Image 1 (cartoon, rainbow, N blue to C red):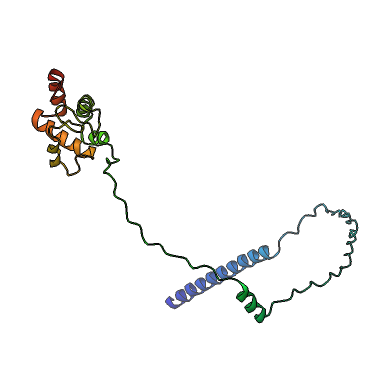
Image 2 (cartoon, one colour; image 1 turned 180 degrees about the vertical axis):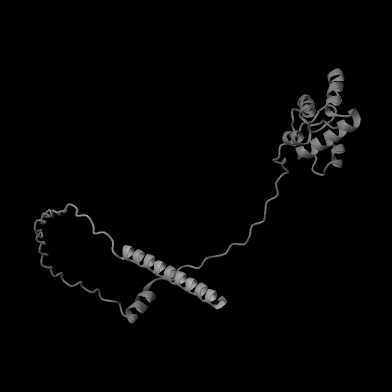
Length: 212
């Protein structure tokens, strides 16, 4: 009895499995047929293409090329005769020889009297002094000598722009004190700084005493 039950259980299981396989196979077959057979396309309106003829280009005519004028033959250039070497020697001998340059002995420089230097003593004073101090020194030099390098006092013998007495005092500023106005101004500035403290101090004293 037990064996019959086992047999029927296995038979039932086998039939159920076989039925499932058959159903599954039928579903796949139906799906494949639906994918392979697409519906036919719907008929649409037919489109006709119209071709427009392109106009043909007019034929081009080439302009006639002007004919070249016939070349004129030029007469050959006449050759000038070249002088021979013997003729060149004869013409060179016929020419007179150029006179030789004579060298003159160097002339000795003539001695002249000493002259005053070209540099302006007024410009020198302006370059070494402030504007205020130069104004005082300028007024003092104008009253004493008028900026004359050779100004000489006939009574006292005072000399030069600063009217130094004696004039040889200015040798301490330079050996050319007689002719160099810059040397005289250098001595004048040194003198008023040492005696009056500044050119303006000397000018203030001069205004009271008319000498410095």
